[in-house]
Image 1 (cartoon, helix red, strand yellow):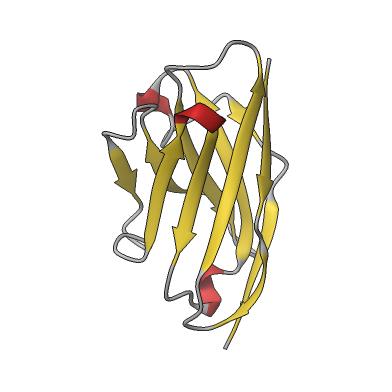
Image 2: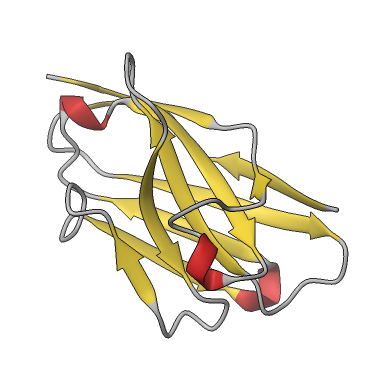
Length: 122
């Protein structure tokens, strides 16, 4: 079992930046893909960003590409989502995800964190 815990959510204004963190624990770690999803009010959960364990491969949803950056710190089993130029439509609960297969991060990841709220006001 892998446990994921997000932190860094909060309330900001349009144009501000925020960094989310997610630390993994549990069974032996390494070689997993990690990523982020979000659920906006009135919408289904959607993929936001993903990365391979090495960080060499990253991928993004069109809606955040160029504004959000995903990174990973292997030594700390932690991934980050740097969110710049936030917009009110970025308001959502953000979830950390992980899966042994990087190819599944943007489709149907196995492990999910409880989520952290990000609120962006105009």
